Image (cartoon, rainbow, N blue to C red; front, side, top):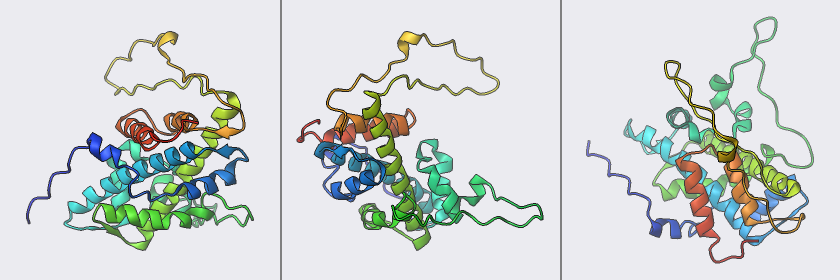
Length: 259
């Protein structure tokens, strides 16, 4: 089998064209935000949220594609999604979706009743106001576009999982952005250092080095681009994915107002 071509490094040119395909439209972003908060969403905030969601889904699909390539496949299966998350903890986002997907039953744990019978997963809400889970199908077109961009296809179950993860992630992003606006800025989100059991614990970090996010400017009724960036820092653990999402969101909103 011929060797797979090396994945090109991300460059400024690639970042500059990050929203060219625009798989998640600002109108879709605003619809999700309306399900969460009555606050207005600025144009730049909608583009930033769409960009962050695109970056996260692109990285998940890329991880799954690499797992499939090891079996000489282009079509993605749910097990490729699990492999991607297992290899990169940064990809473990939108975890509220996991309870609704058979793919993740092994990760979240299969529940049994007192007689040892498997308890079925939670059913979709019948609420008239769509939740992130009920509204997941809205992301199908964007997910398929991202798959095409990476030269991959996916079985329906995989597409459904990607839809759900995108929907839950963006919904959580909206909630955190609204919280940032209500509280006047995100404060005190420190860092976590992981060590193995045979390593000494790192020295305590001085409070001065816990760089809190700056107090926001603007009114208390509109979510702006910087509120989305703050919410992104909350949603994504510190690492390459978070930095890439922030960089690409800033680039996507370069020609729009920061409000």
